[in-house]
Image (cartoon, rainbow, N blue to C red; front, side, top):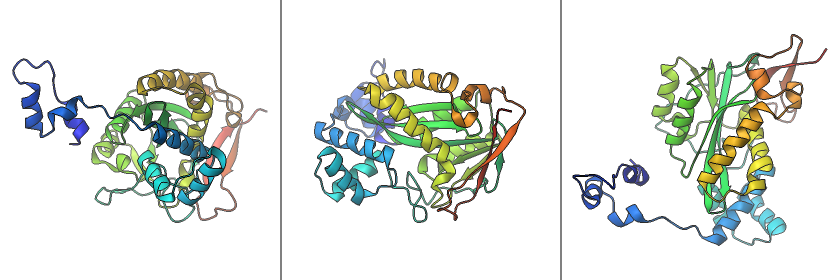
Length: 307
């Protein structure tokens, strides 16, 4: 277990075992139980700027990120510091060929094949996709995971965490599967999604697991667009102080996003309208494939059209 997981097991009001003894049994320092790290204000300022640049230009690596910070935010730091902060934030530049788009893969974890090649996505709960993004706070940073139905853009479940450990993704998955089950669940090969505790839940629910190959960043394009929308329409406007505020505010925003925010790509309907089956009979096939990225497979999505 991680240090945070060990500390979470300690019961301060235990009637028989003192906190000191619990700390010794769990092999953690007693002082660390009460210590809350305070983020460096300057580092928080830099990470906030990195977040803004990356949200608008996710293809920037550490070199161009360093230049953008200097030009747009008057932040003059070295490339190595930029690279370190991007790694902490879970950010990685999008490349068409060389690298996966987000979190690093764990070699010991089982990888699953990509199942969406030339697949026509024609109905709700056919394909769900998931991804993680950095979530900036005034008092530091956190991470946000969302599970989205690709046909309707409906956010089935989401969760926020102060760390990139798998638990918050597993909690979101449990929440999503309470009311529905997809035929295929797609993710990148990040450690959170290849974790056996995560994949065994999908297997138990008889869900086919699909994972993006290296360089297939557009395979999760719907969730990438969601991150941009959430940040510009909510996170940047409200500037949450801490994760408690973020969870409360995002709960309101995702309710708005699902039930009130209309999408042009959904024929000006809301994700909830489409996800719950309020579909019109005439349909049009729309293929998502940028002409400059022909090495990527075509994803075919059926969307409604007004007669």
